[in-house]
Length: 260
Length: 152
Image 1 (cartoon, one colour):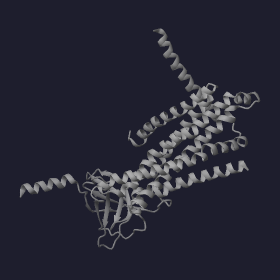
Image 2: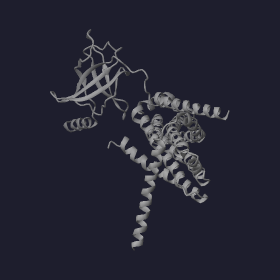
Image 3: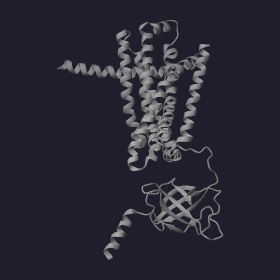
Image 4: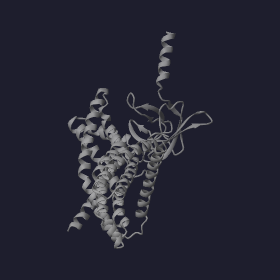
């Protein structure tokens, strides 16, 4: 009986310690003494791997999600004779919800898992310890550029996703289904507000970027340095960041649009 | 060469992000870059504003000439006091103009329609529009209709 309690207590303590360690890792890599000339090329390289190489998947999925929204919205709204509102529907659902959330999920799968595996393998092959041996702080050299690159790339990817999606929705509803182009765009412009919808969507994307990158980098840095440990850490990255994104999305939506 | 390629692609990525944000701002949310200056404000009292909200359109013959700035209660007369921001180039509204609360379509948003009168003097900043017509409230309308039915 007591053993059960001890087991429960130990797992809770382990989790709390993990959160504390992850906070420590992020804090130490972000507040590290800035060395712009060393840091900047590393940052560029990471933005290339995390952001630029994710562009293709973001653009393709954004296009298809926008096209599906346009098609579904049209088939529902045409029953009420208000198919002009499809622009408003596509734009609002993309800018407020789908762009930040779907981008964050894709980002976790495409970039987050790669980050975890890379850092985990560096740890398993003792590259991190070697860096420490020659007097280079791995948090500054390895972790910090990746964190910053994730923070910077994710909002940009979400903005591109939203724009491509709206363009895809316009393609389907204006070009194929024959909604009048002027009413499509003017309905959209009347209902989407820049500060209320677009900026709140960008804030969501920033928060998701921070959370996903943080989880990915920490899981890699803290993994058990074996091949099995790396595979578990990669899985955990995707699962934890997806759950965190979806739960945070509800909280952020309630705060931003729920009039609480 | 490899580094140069990475730099070019990251620059391209940033530009693409900024372009997409501009597209969202200008094309999707209809944000105007030129902030209008020198608008003037006129006030109008309404018995009932229905579902009118601030930032609703103010139109003349259907053309937008301004927007609703604020909606308050006039504490002396206990009616709604609506302040309208009119674009400064619209300086030909006569002082006996009338304001109506209209509805766009059957279920659309409510806006204010201005009809110009015959006087030679024009509305200036801070003036009041005296001739106003309240919003059409569906319940009142049904009530009147039923009342007429019964009295007939």
